[in-house]
Structures are given as C-alpha cells and as structure tokens.
Image (cartoon, rainbow, N blue to C red):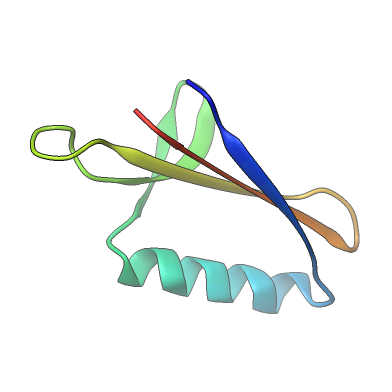
Length: 70
C-alpha cells in the first residue's frame, strides 16, 4: 500500500502531539496496533475504505505525518 508522507517543522513536541491527538479523535480516528506499528485508524472497511495516519517526531524539530488507505 502506497503511503504519502509530509514533513513539518515544530517547536514544542508535547503541544504538537496534543493538537494532533485532538484533531484525530475529533475526526473519529482510533489508536490501534496494526501490523506491529501504532497507527490511527478510521473506518471499518465495510462502507468506506479504512484510512490510516501515523506521525513520528524524527528529531528535535522535524515531524513526519504519513497517511494511507486500505
């Protein structure tokens, strides 16, 4: 499955992570363990495709956000 990744700068990791979690929760994403990695998942695949988002703080100033559909 092809993944799309965006890279963003950040200054405060805890505030950034709190905002990401807030947005994903509001959009009905749930944190799950899928194939050995913690990802945010939305949908069940019955009526719509399952959407995934994963984010990683790469260093002290770089955030990678990755999304894909199954």
